[in-house]
Structures are given as structure tokens and as C-alpha cells.
Image (cartoon, rainbow, N blue to C red; front, side, top):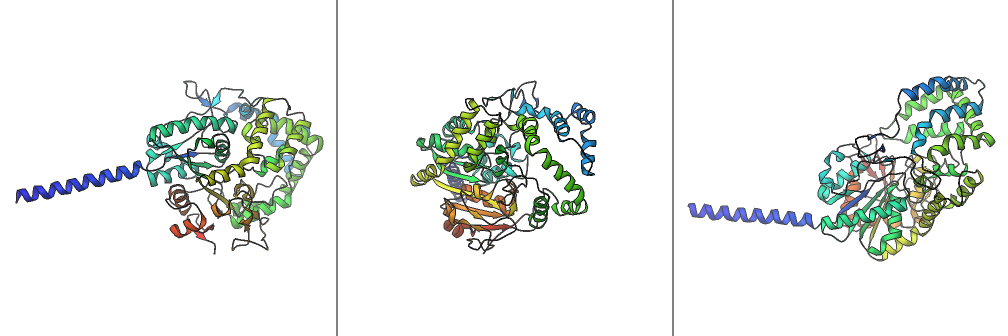
Length: 490
């Protein structure tokens, strides 16, 4: 009997060991995933990774002191009551208050002016950075976490970078980073997942390094690669209209299902204080018009973001020439500067991107594009009627979808809700639309994060038909009340 039991135990142990080896082999056979995050995923610090590391911008006692000394708040309260305040003086006071933020700007050649950077450039896998996965339940940490759930954290890397930097430089650093991933994993290809601004870095990498043939899949999530309408500000396109703002608040109150803000309550406040809001909007129109507008740009806007390469690289392709000329005529951009060359370089990448991605597909690389819609864009430019995910316009993030103006419908629509015509997308069979999902709010543990995890790790082909057959995800899905479930739009 003992011999029989010993034999049975030996067989069980052998089977268990084989199953363990099988699991190890299956995990080892996974394609590594590199997540390329967007703005805000990595905090900026003065003197990063040294004993002198400190927040790049501090809202401290001196900041509060400036508010008090300049009487900026009291002037703004006067404006809200309809009292007369000098636009020039108000602008100069605002410029004084935001002065600490100018440290984030680059110089006229697109180079850093201060020792500011990130402290989380990790070249090893996320298995060694589990604290990052628990840092936040949404955005890039949630994306990384759900991918780690699917394939193991030792198969997932995050390429963190200074979001202000020229994305062409980021692409060079990403190439070195991917070399390290390939060496650590023993694989010759990776899946690249670009999020928000990270899609621009991914686009630059494709442009410069696709000949390396090391991309298995390229996934674009809520992408800025084709531009963002708020960057139209670079051509002086600033539209502040009380009717537009009122419509924005009304649409957000009815259509927004997330938890970032109670837009219903905010809309009620706007209704109650409608006259007060009109006073402020009217004054802001005065501040941003004509000579006042030039002063506002030079004293307030451009000292903070005017030389940051990545902000320029968010200009929509068709707006670039006007933006470039406006900034040159304003006397801000020197055509012979390093910044001018930088912004032209990525503009060229935008122009080649469709061709580049088609070449990738022809070579066997799979592409997926995920974008939000159904929410109004930020209401401060002439593009305020564009559908968006609250930040990035759907028409840009989808590579060309035709969208109904916010609050309206299309006569010819591919989506059952009559809001999207995807037939104009450059990669229609590889593009998914999520209605009502705020920019990068893929809350962990919900349908949104599950969808992202499935797209990034599936064995199925990355096209609408295959993903629908495998998971029952349709091309158009909508966020439901409670911000936890997605439902196919049929």
C-alpha cells in the first residue's frame, strides 16, 4: 500500500510540476507591453533624484501674499458685480500671480531653463513598482494595472518622461528604453500602448524607428497625435461666449456620467448667477481682444506654455501654418530658433502618420484606436461645438471621424445614436468609440478598464469583427449611470 501511495504521490507531484512549468512557459511566451503615458502621469520636480528634490511649483505663502498685495481677487469681484476694471491692470496683476508657473516654460530654442524633471524613469518592469499600480484607480495607473492582471506585472513596462519635452526626443529615448525591454524579456517585439500625449510619442517612434521591426501592436488611447483644438490658442483663436458656456454646462449636466464633478449642481449655480457670469465673460472678451489680447498672450499665456515643445506638437495639422504665422507676427516665435525647427519636425510627422501606420499594418503590425465622444469640448476656442472626451476632440483622436456638433445629430451616421460617422476614419475597422467616458477615466474594476485590458492583451485580431466575436464589444459603446458599465449602442 505504501508503494502504491508513493507512486500516486509521485505522479501527482510530476503533474503539478508540469503544470507549473506550463504556466511559466505560457507567461514567458507573452509579448511585453510598454505603456506610454500622457501629461500628468509623472510629477515634475526641481532637482529630481537628489537630496534637494522639491515640487517644481509651490503654492506657498508668497503666492498667497501676491494675491493679497495685488488686490487681484477684489478686482475680480468688482468685475463680477459689473464694475469697471482696467483690462491692462488686471492682466498685469494676473501675470504677477502666475509668475511661479513660468519656471515650467522652456527657452526660445525649446530647451529647459531650469533643472526640472521626473523622478520615476524606471527601466525595469512594473513588477518592481507595484506602488504605482495602486497610486490611482483611474488613468494610466488603471490601464497598467488591468494589463498586469492579464499578463503579469513582469511583462509590463511604463515609459515615463517629462511631458514638456519634444516628442521626437522622447522617441529617441523610447528606442533605448525598448532595447532594454527586449533584452530583459528575451523578446524581439513589444506592444506599445500610447495614452493621450503618449500617442504623439508613439507616432514619433513609428516615424523614426519602424524599420527596426520591433512593434507587435500599436494601440492609441484617447490620442493627441493629430492635435487638440485647445491648441488653436496658438493662433489667437480664443472665443469666450456666455451662450457657449451655458450650453456647455447644460450638456455636461445631462450627458456626463463620471464622478470628477457634479456638473448638475454647477449648472444650477450658473443659472442662479447668470448675470454675474455674463459680467465676467464680457470682461474676459475685452481682455483677450485686440491689443489687450496681445498683451494677455505675451504676459499670461506664453510665459507659461509658449515655448514648451509638446504643447506646440498638440496643434491640429490643418491649423499649424496659421498658428506658426500668428506667433511669428506676435513677435514671440523666432523663425530661426531651435523651437521653430522642433515644432516643424513633428508637424511633418503628423503629415506622414497615416502613411506610416498603413505601412505598419501592411507589415503585419496590428493597430487599435480608442477614443471618447459625446461630451462637449473645452469652450474657449471656435471649435467649441466639437464632440470630445472633455479634452481631446473625437475627430482628431479617431483619425478623422465625422462627428455631430455637441447636442445635435448627423443625417448620415454609422452609430445608432446618430452622433458619429466612422466611415471617414483612416482606420475604421480598428477604431472603437466610447460615449460619455471622460478623458483617460478608465476606472479600475469597471467595464472601461476591462475593455482596455482586453484590447491590449487579447489573442484575437485587433479589428471590430474579431473583438465583437470574442468579447461582444461593438464599435460604439456608451457609459451608463454609475460610471461602471459599458453598453453596446445598437
